[in-house]
Image 1: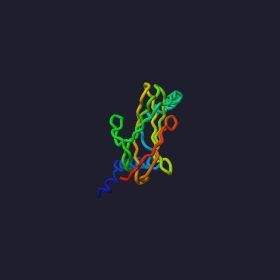
Image 2 (image 1 turned 90 degrees about the vertical axis):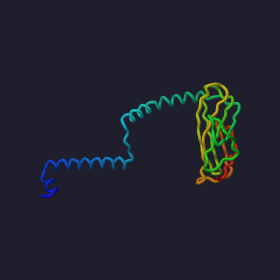
Image 3 (image 1 turned 120 degrees about the horizontal axis):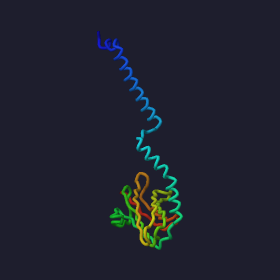
Image 4 (image 1 turned 60 degrees about the vertical axis):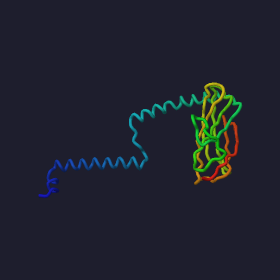
Amino acid sequence: MTFRQRIEDNPMIWVLSMLVAGFLAGFGAYETILRVSNQVRVSESEHKTMQRAATRVAELEEQIKVLKAREGKTPSAHRLYISAALVEGQPKNILSAVKLDEFFYISSRWLGASANGYYEQRWEIRDEEGLVAEQRHPFVVKEDGEYSTWASFLIRSGEHKPGSYRLRVFLNGQRFEDRELLVTGK
């Protein structure tokens, strides 16, 4: 009597092996359905966290409306710096030109910003074809005076070429600065 005949003749082993085969087939079908329908498994705790966050959306939108209604007064001055590095949020060095494929930082120093006023800042880099890069930074100043912001940028050589670009800075939708930005090759 062969091993196969022993398994086929023993009903308990045959039933258990069919149960295992059915379980594996069902699990494989479940995984396939998840993959084909682009679904992911989420733990129960993560699902509850997402539900709590979703319930706070309306509250946060209301807070944003209140902040925007408290739009800060126009600052008296703006200083714009382009640097290769930042130290504690301040420019380490000032660049006259930036290189393709190398990160650089644009820092804004707002003078005369009003305390508790809401500001929406936007930096834009443009070429002759349009927008190349954009960063936004909303902020609320704690006390009257000076406030600094910064953002990092990277202009990729595969998508753009060396030349003159425009760097524009907006605050609460108003253009504050429009400057030439020289971009060199590697």
